[in-house]
Amino acid sequence: MPAQLTQASWPQLLGSPNLALLQAGLPGEEPGAIEGLPLGFAAADGALLHGRVFEPSGAARAVAVLAPATGVPQRYYQAFAQWLAARGYAVLSFDYRGMGASRSARGGKASMRDWIRSDLSAALAAARERAGRGPQRLPILWVGHSLGGNGLPMVDGLMHLDAAITVGSQFGYWGLWPAGWHRTVTRVFFSHWVPLCVRLTGRLPGWALGGGETLPGPAAMDWSRWGRSAGYFTDDPACRDWYRPQDFKGQLQLWSVADDLTYGPAPAVDALARCFEHAAERVERIHLHPQEIGLKRLGHFGPFRRAAGERLWPLLLERIEAKVPALRPGY
Image (cartoon, rainbow, N blue to C red):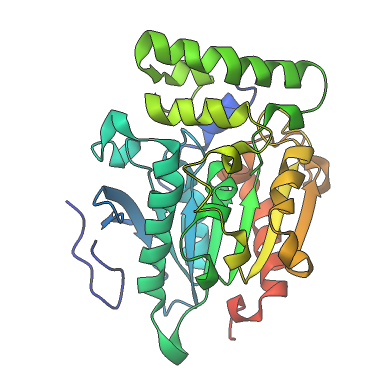
């Protein structure tokens, strides 16, 4: 059962070359780390989502939402959540409906549209409750990994975000992948592999992704349709009324990683950045080579591993705090 938390705390409510990095990033407990407490919160359609909250030992100076990638459980982000909490952030991580701790919420009927519009929006609403209202309101930082960032233009309540960081988040149309092997594999994945797996099993098994968790069939088929369309989710009639990137008023930094060619190549991240052209003066594109931080590889899943943390996480936080004074310590 979700922990009973006070109102002053949180509201009630084709094979991957990076697979080894994903599995290695699933945490063991680190002595002295801030322990997360379970939290249940409801989406607008009534689906009950399950997450964990990580509170700093002293007064929080900001609230952070960790929005996960497709098929990646929230526990993968635990070390990063603990690190943020140790620096004064009250942090929410969570699983999409039908996944991980939220598996019972609408189960196999969950769609990617549900994840983006309902679940991401519910997480932001929970963060707003924690942030409070009025002069004492805490600023809110969104950290989106892959899907957790590429769904940002359709999140309800974008105007309430002070800042957002996306890592490996992209416009997922296959034609944006580099010509050659990676583009061919991506096209086959969306056009043939995903529909075949769903037809045979009713879902997209984790092994068919090269790792991660099994995806509900409707979510997998949304992904397949969007990935075959040049406008990605903007070509989906069901999404058009939700697409409101102009509501975002904060500072946005979109990170791509040079050796992330399977999931988040730079041209696809550039395409997501173009969704926010209305706010070009507040949008920053950052392309990172692992060698710049002394690593041989990083890929799609490496950025949230504890092993990369001491080199990358301070850089992520320092760059966004430099642009948003309200996030800085002692503001």
